[in-house]
Image 1 (spheres, rainbow, N blue to C red):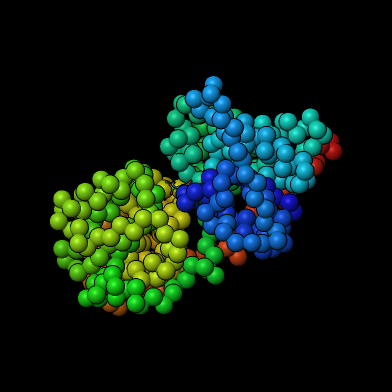
Image 2: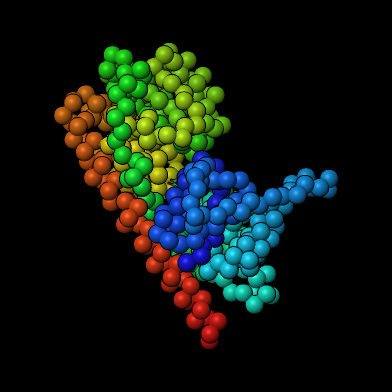
Length: 381
Ligand code: GMT
């Protein structure tokens, strides 16, 4: 198959899923064309089946806001025509789904009928998408997609609750590539962070409000008062400065390290004992899955799709959003006993295996084939 993938090329979860999916499809022999405004963060190597087409947005003195959506639609037309793609797969509804619809309409004038699949990832529905600023366009472009997937049942339910959806939505969860995410021997790194064998807690995110990063710190403060421990804060974003300030005002600055954006996240996870994800909303929680794959149990909120990933009392615990006392108590119950911690670590890996790339990839390939067949039938009729 020749597949065009559109995504945000940054460190965000939707871009990571799109890039990892494209890489896996290329490994299976499919030809994959990424169409984005810069090279996706994890697409940093050569593969004969992988192509990258940059969307460049021309600036002009008239534009206060350069029209990225039009530039993307034009690029899609160009790539589909000249690379003879079979299907487009756009990740994150805004503005990718409406750009794909526009490209599809234009391509029909050239006698080309290409289907497009939209994958909804989370905030494109739960936060930004349902805002009246975008809602009519998001509703329209979901309904005009030839296939729609969400990364959890919870996100499917949210989509159907907040939008007038006429299209059948398929749930295909996030996945993990165990060739990359597995426990790595990094004892020297562990000693550098926790010289007195303290427990190591970790949070990774893009530090947006929705991640409740202040609750990571408040939870850690309570854990640290009982169990000698260190906290690694990985990633960067709007809340980081306030979070650093909070650590100082709580007097725990010496025990918290802000590491910024990191590529080799699996190495940092490998030295960690517990992952914290107190998000206010989370459609799936890919970062928690990455942690579990490296044998790190997770204390998460019970928001959105997290109950579809985290199994309470098995590979971690869940608490209500904002209940830092409960999160701290549950963390302490795991961290205070070596045997309990060891069992939770084993269980985290067992749970992560349910989302092995090898199990999820065929679901996307089957779905592409179904959508392509339906498109062919429509045009033969
Ligand atoms: O908020 C983020 O973490 C980024 C965001 C994105 O779309 O880039 O992530 C969303 O997509 C991920 C991959 O499907 C999911 O695992 C995350 O749960 C989801 N984030 C939210 O719903 C807040």
